[in-house]
Length: 101
Image (cartoon, rainbow, N blue to C red; front, side):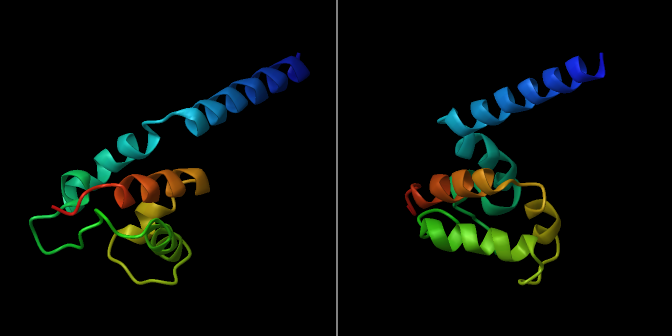
C-alpha cells in the first residue's frame, strides 16, 4: 500500500514538474506576483528597480544572491527562497524580454 502511495506521489510530482517546465506562460504567471513592487511587466512607477529589459542572467543571479543571502534585502531574500531554479530562469527570461518603455 505504501509503495503504491509513494509511486502515485512521485508520478504526480513528476507531472507537476513537467507541466511547469513546458508551460510557456510560467515566467509571466510568476511575474504577476512581482508587479505589486516592480510594476506591471517589470516597469515600475515608484522607487524600486525596473526589471524590464535587464539581461536575463543578471536578473537570475540577483534572485540567486537574494535567496542565498549574498545580497541584502528587506523582503526579496524571503520571496526568492520560494522559487526553484527553473522558476528563477523563467522569471529572468520573462523580464529580460519586456520592453523598457
